[in-house]
Amino acid sequence: MGIIFPMLLSLILKGSAIIIHSPGFWKALKSKLRMFKFLLAMAVPVSSPPSNLLIKLSQRLFDAEAQQSAFVAALTTPQVFPQAILWMRPRPEVVPFALAPALPWQSATIDRLQPDQRPGQHPLHSAGSYYCLDMASVFSAAVFSAIPSPVGLVLDLCAAPGGKSLLAWQHLQPKALWCNEVIRKRVRILIANLKRCGLWDALVFNLDPKAWAEHLPQAASVVIVDAPCSGQSLLAKGDTALGCFHPVTIKKNASRQKRILGQAAQTVAGGGYVAYMTCTFSSEENEQVGAWLLKQFPQFEAVAVPSLADYASPLADFPCYRLWPQSGLGAGGFTALFRNRDAQMNPTTLPESLSTQALRLYS
Ligand SMILES: C[S@@+](CC[C@H](N)C(=O)[O-])C[C@H]1O[C@@H](n2cnc3c(N)ncnc32)[C@H](O)[C@@H]1O
Image 1 (cartoon, helix red, strand yellow):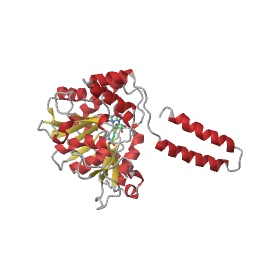
Image 2 (cartoon, protein in one colour):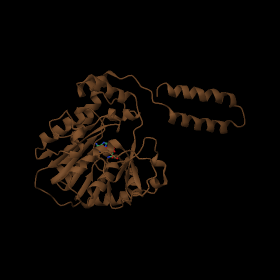
Image 3 (cartoon, protein in one colour):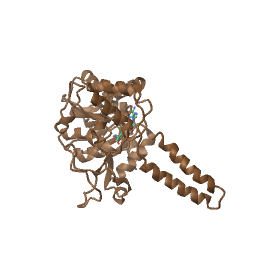
Image 4 (cartoon, helix red, strand yellow):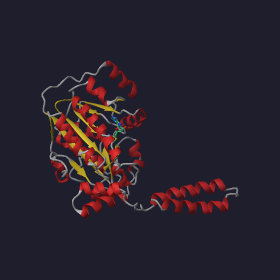
């Protein structure tokens, strides 16, 4: 975008200077602003030069130079990726959007749209018929297909704004869905999305994940950790992720991810699953976090996901999966599924303090 912003701005300001003293100034300014917004929406993304840290990352991820270049190009030349919609109410016979062909890892309740579609602006969206997702989220949630459903309790530890919770609700048909978001100001959007999509039965919590390991050990059938991460994939769609390739950022995120994943492991019942996913590419935040889990909690095993076989990560010696930004399917990410081989399973009884908090938040 670098050069396009100043060009557009100067175009508009030149015109404004002429009319600034005229009576219709404010009206003209409004129309200029509308034009600015329109031009911005139409602007063709412009490449930015790759940083050394990005180039080094590409060399760590790929042996072949062609793959390194394609990866770097995808993160420095943002593109518009097709969106998906997850139907939360019965899918109409005629879907009011141009559809793209379905991918093998997308479930029947999801439609992939052509890139120019704007599903967030349709009345069916405000009516709660569907939830808009990017395909990278659909990819991450494809690990749910390896979990036999229906399941008991699903606990989503990093839930806002709610995409994985809704995907879990549709894919896993849980007896109960509890959605936890530690950042208070993000709880509001989580609740709004769950309510809009008709999930009145879900409970919402605003707790640090360690509270779950303490209060609900070995009780949940599935724990989802869609972890906070350095967010490198955001660059592929033109968003910013400051310092996302810096070793300090990556290390800080990896430690936080291990902490959350460790707490998730303690909350999962015998025979239950932990789904771990990120939207970043550094192996320190992905494969290495998974390897850490398997070492620290030897009762867990990584589970193969047949629908993702073509996306197996070459950077691990256990099954886990990557979507690359150069695939053109989505901005990219990492996903893995772990199963607790233990037999112990505690009842999912919430302490009263926590259930009261949930009811108060969601009412
Ligand atoms: C990738 S986003 C989750 C997206 C969400 N699962 C979805 O599909 O819509 C990561 C979430 O983790 C939350 N988070 C940040 N720090 C956390 C921590 N220390 N423990 C748990 N969650 C955290 C963030 O607030 C954010 O909502």
